[in-house]
Length: 318
Image (cartoon, rainbow, N blue to C red; front, side, top):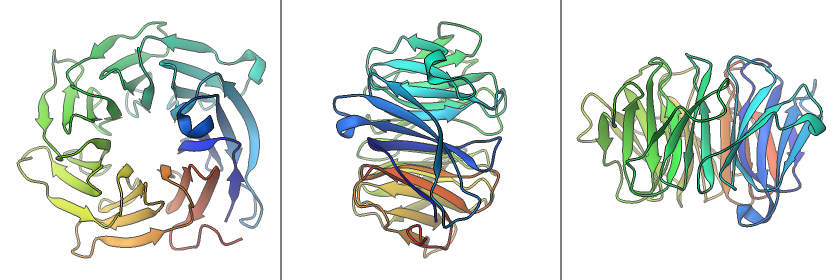
């Protein structure tokens, strides 16, 4: 299956919501500790035996930790950067005309960005400055800052159905549910005893949310009754860096971990682990599932490789 070698360490990968053969990768030099960053926009080859090709790349002075495609403009990308900035890139324009905008408000590294899938004009960023910020494309400043977490906010994700609702996962071991119309968070879930690195909403049941933690587990919660998780998924050997629900199947999700593996889970069955891929040779930190092509996965990691493969096949097979 197609592979791409990045000059820097991979941090995040996202399929385009408009073109089934397009994806973007966020990378950072020196494992994101110090150095430059680069955003790669890649195209899938017409044949799986051919490599991924680069359509365009954008350089940044600092590492890029995450990115999100716009849901309203097919060429627009939003990048979360280590210097605290949020940068907007137009992939239809040459690198010399990018970034379109650099939004500098966060006071520490921006760790995640998520574009609103229903409103389509707004996005949220989360940062190591313990805050989440809400932005719209047409404004040069954020609309609102959400500050309740006591430590880094590693991930923030919009609810797929409720336009104003999002969740945030933090190193303070909680997940908070927010409604942008309310003054504060509407729910606090003490999800794990260790840092929570990622969260994602189920795409078919808008009351279900998954959390991934340094404690090596993934937990699935029903926000209507969250005293105990409805599922606990164990199988990773180290911290779980990212968790993502399938866009096509209610009960399926994928995760990636510092144990270098990507796992597929069915959280409704007893033997929940339905697939494990060990193609990475360093921390696996970036992961996505295509909305447009069922079963198509992409991952990236600190081994400077991007893999795209169909679930059930070997990511390394050419």
